[in-house]
Length: 301
Length: 275
Image (cartoon, rainbow over all chains, first blue to last red; front, side, top):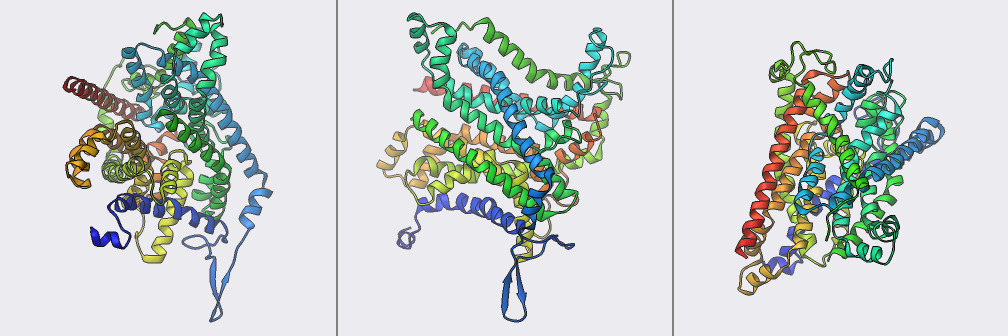
């Protein structure tokens, strides 16, 4: 050990070195490669792109940086449209999750400890069950001869089945449904630490319940709201499975465009350029999430 | 403190849980439906277990489940080791070079859209194969590496928050008595964080077992996982066998979660009684 320390290697260093190097190789380096390939030409080869560095003649190495893929993304309105639509869908879904999830998290945090644990378990359970299977469940509920239409028709509310599957509505339902636990859990963790006596004090001083909520609970749960919203918003922007299964052919989401460019068109450089733009779009939100998390855990200590 | 909630909050909770559970329960109910139309209840011949037999005789699904199981077990074990090391480092070493980077690298995968992670890992594997000839082709190995990369981030968060919530007095006492750091870790720290390690293992297993997008990018011919097979079936519409699969998954998950939480509650009570 002593000899190792002399060359700057300590026991502590060894503990963090393994995960550090793993993430460096399999998380950071891949992004550099994506960046590189986003600047290369499409080629009919395996792999389907041309190298950036090429030997020209005997002794000179040429770098060929190709901005065509990015130019292409900005000239074809499909891509900008898909980016804008993904942001819109993610934003509205986050809002819907917040409207449904906030009262739930609040209610769970204020329940008796024994009831609270059962309710928490019920929020966590869907999270552990395959996302794919839970999205699939909505196909059975929403399709033309599905459960909802059958019930409404047998009750006589409607006479023709409603078209719900393969519409934007189905996609929103799927996203809100799948991501709801991600919003409830951090929000609950935040609300659980709240000092409820503040509310009682406010009410004693003549505050109406909704006023007390607006002036005390809401500001105090700000970090929980932000953390939960980011956990829904960021992955939802790049969501693939839900629009592919519930959204129908017109559901233009950027994650789906990337998938199709890669698998259907084998346009790896274009897919890489889409990934880089998506990343640039999301990094500010990721950093925001990280600073909120840091504040939350600093507050807990 | 009074635990009374208003009528508004109670109805929000009731409706919210109905929203979360009606789709899941509908799959369970229709898994016993005899009709091939899946969502039209065939009252004359239901309930029936015929789709259960047909699922258990479906070679394609069973093969895919076997591949998923192998990947998930290796992934869970590997990411628990990596995640525990990272979580321990972040929670116990206040200052070290690369702390900020390590923290960022273990938070980012939690929110990174899967299509980006999947694409970037595939391009890495292709580039590595060109450069050093490894990994030769794609399959179980590349999928497992990809899964470990995002699963270990979740394990790190679990271990880190568990370690941050218990104080270092026991560890320090052991050190004062002359135990070496490695011994302290295995004799004191590990038993205390064991529930967190178990949760981490189960979570990593589930993440891998359920993953579709990253697997699709990093798998090769002949290594289709269960979600990949399910996805291609579901794209063509509903299938009674998928309802059965969902019911079986739900049963296992429920049993596991209830079992683990009962065990942890008992452990917490015993700890309290001992203290």
